[in-house]
Amino acid sequence: MASMQPHALDQLWATVSSRKGADPASSWTAKLLSKGVNKCAQKVGEEATEVVIEAASGNAAGVVSESADLLYHLEVLWAATGVEPEQVYAELRRREGTSGIAEKAARPKG
Ligand SMILES: N=c1c2ncn([C@@H]3O[C@H](COP(=O)(O)OP(=O)(O)OP(=O)(O)O)[C@@H](O)[C@H]3O)c2ncn1[C@@H]1O[C@H](COP(=O)(O)O)[C@@H](O)[C@H]1O
Image (tube, rainbow, N blue to C red; front, top):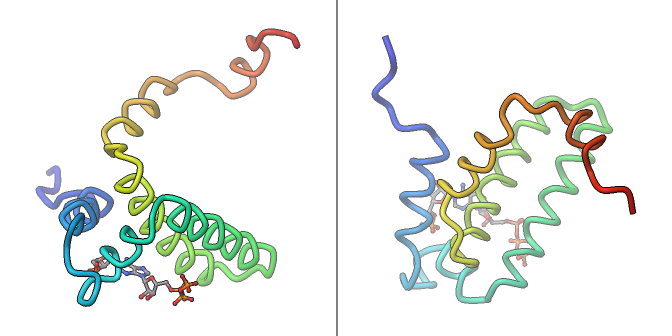
């Protein structure tokens, strides 16, 4: 039977998007958003690097933990840039079934 629980990313989005305009003193998300897009983007870069470091160290538990940080900060960046998760999901669905190898071969030669 299909679970009625919302996907963790959707649940997180409900919280993250609700923090727009919230008090930066009581919400980390609101604090980050108040610093602007560049700061939110910088955090995504940092967290992505931490995922890479954990992977290169062979630490799967670290990859899990840093991936959660990365996904959280990516959602904050979506909120900062006015992107809705559904737009990203739609793009993923659009790509479904197209191999990266076929997609690369079809790119215009530059
Ligand atoms: N998933 C997260 C989450 N992951 C990481 N973080 C916070 O992100 C911060 C990043 O820590 P870093 O050490 O990377 O950053 P820093 O060095 O302290 O700061 P910088 O000076 O480098 O920017 C920490 O304070 C973490 O607690 C998160 N904060 C919030 N959430 C989720 O967002 C929800 C809403 O949180 P608030 O907005 O705080 O209510 C929470 O209930 C959680 O579900």
